[in-house]
Every structure is written in C-alpha cells, then in structure tokens.
Amino acid sequence: MTLTDGSSTRTAAPFKRQKAASSLVGDAWRRLRRNRAAVISLIFLTILVSVAALAPVLGFQPPLTQDLSRMNEGPSRDHLLGTDELGRDMLSRLVYGAQVSLLVGLVVQIATALIGTLLGLIAGYYGGLVDTVIMRLVDTMYAFPQFLFAVFMAAILPPSVWSILAVHVLVGWPWNARVTRGCVLSLKETDFVTASRVVGASNWRIMFRHILPNAIAPLLVGASFGIAGAIISESAISFLGLGFEDEPSWGKFHNQALSAGGGFYWWLATFPGLAIFMTVFAYNLLGEAIRDALDPRLRGVQ
Image (cartoon, rainbow, N blue to C red; front, top):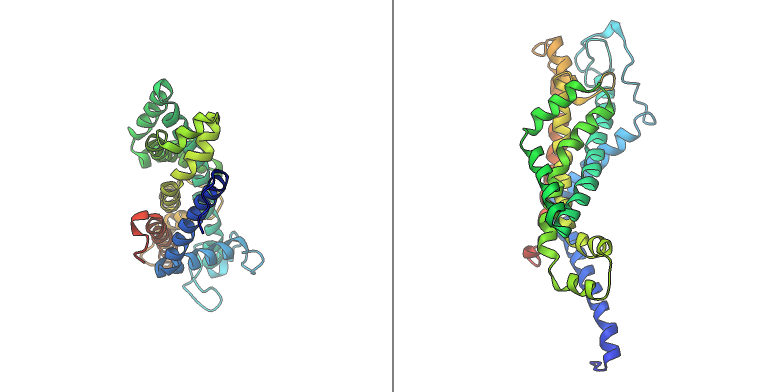
C-alpha cells in the first residue's frame, strides 16, 4: 500500500536513503568477501599483525640477545631462520622488525590522511586564495622526487622512529590533499550540498557530514596502497643506513647482510626480502579488492 499524504512522504524518504546506503555498504562487503585474494591477504595480514603485537607473549626472544658462539649459522632446529653476525636469532628479529615496519605504515597513513584530507577539504570547498595557497604548496612538494627528498630529510635528522615517521608524513600528505580536493570540487555543487546550505548548515558540517563521507572511497583505497609504499620506503631508507639506530628493521637486515657478505650468508637477506614482498603484495591485493568492491559500476557483476 502506498502512502500519499505529505507527512508520510517526509518520513519515508530518509528511511529509503538509509536503506540504500546500507545496501551499498553491504554489497561492497559481499563482493570483498567473494574475492579470494582479498580474503587470503586479510588472513595473512591479521596473522602478521597478531604475531608482531604478541611477540613477547608468544615466547620470541628479545631481538638484541646475542650468542657469539653461534654467529652466522644457517637455518636449523634451534634457529629456524638462522642467526646473524652477532648470533642473534633471525626469526625473532623478523617478528620484532614487523612491529617497526607495520607501525611506520599505519601511523604514516593515519597522519597523512588527517593532514591531507583536512587541507584538501578546505582547499576544495572554499576555493579562491585558500585553494591557491594550499595547492601551490602541494605542487612544491611534488616538484621534489619523493624518495630522494625522503632520503635527504632522513640524512639530516637524527636516526629515530620519530624522524622516519616525520619524513614519510611530509612526503605523503600531498596525495591525500589532491585527491580530497578533486572529490570536493565534484561534490560541492550537488543538490544535497545546496539543500544543506539552504537549511542553514555550517560550512564545517557540510564538509564533514555531507561531502567527506562521499569522498572516502578513493581515500580508503589509497591508504591500503600507501601502507605498502611506506613499508618499502622505510626499508629502502634503512638499507641505506639512514633509518633506525637500534630498533630491528627489515631494511636494516639487508644492509647487515650486505656488510656480512650476503653471497655466503644467504638467509640474512632472503627471509627479510620475503617478508617485505609478502606484506607489500598482500596490501596491494587488498587495495585492488577494496577498489573493485567500492566501484559502483561493478554492482551486480559479482
């Protein structure tokens, strides 16, 4: 039965919009679950994060514990992934190194998303001089090769976790700002934003309540790829000897393998390399799956 009076129509419309939004999210989740690569990636990353976070509870020995009587031993029953030049267990160092790499990737993406999304919202919504100033700053950052700029900043800053995080946030936020600005420019003149202005909604309410939720999809996809990129960048900087001073890092392991003679002690570089490859590959597969799941053109295809 159809209700035709005005009051019934006004109460039914929000319900329909809410139901449509719920259907969109549910449809994206169903398509994501049907993607085997995404499911395998999620399982792998969940196990990796859990093992890294619970390393002391699971009985992994401290990564700096040395046994000079067992230096540069290959994989064995006592040391499944061998030992390094100071007799430290490589499996324990890989697990603790995962804490550093995953922390860098996660914190960098959260910080770059907060800074870049906020600046992109302001630039796209207000336009004019504000937009010009913010986007010229973005263009200035893009004028420098990102990795070389990150290496330069890492070289002049003291070696620490905070220095690495600051370097990656500095080179990472412009992408979020540019993508967010583009989404805002395509949304701020739509009917629902105009209606919000008419009823007296504030600019900040319009930006964060109406525009940002509709621009979140490309940011989610970019965050997944960005975590993988941050892990690779941190590993490369650590490989060059500009990363952390004492903390174990997957990139630093390759630097140590090179100085110890990687051709003879193959396990020093092979296992950290596999850890980087598998983690980055999983994040990339997950990013592609999220992109496909959120693409409205694929609704009903899978």
